[in-house]
Length: 107
Image (cartoon, rainbow, N blue to C red; front, side, top):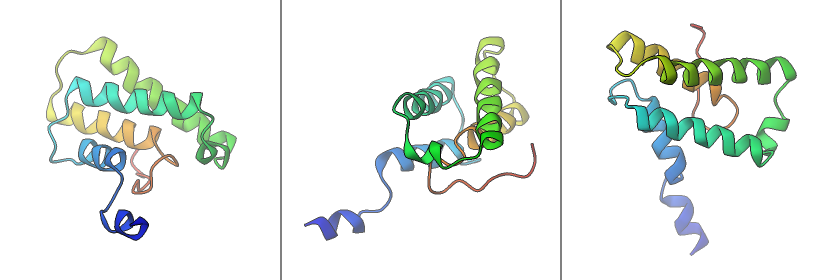
């Protein structure tokens, strides 16, 4: 039975993050809030994945978390270019917390 769980694919949380970070997915405010809440919970729970990151990397994660959060405060609707930038900030803010998260070089 345990083996069957491994054959089902990524965890539902990972699936949702993958969908939100997919450039073809229309990004909405609720998606951004969900990712920010995910990160907040990981930090509050002192997730071991965060403990493996260097202090400079943690600072970068926080920087991009703050950029995404501030964009929610200042904007109601996003153009495609703004949505791509926001999606990239979310990708960079979740670095080290999810398994399928290639670090983007365009920051």
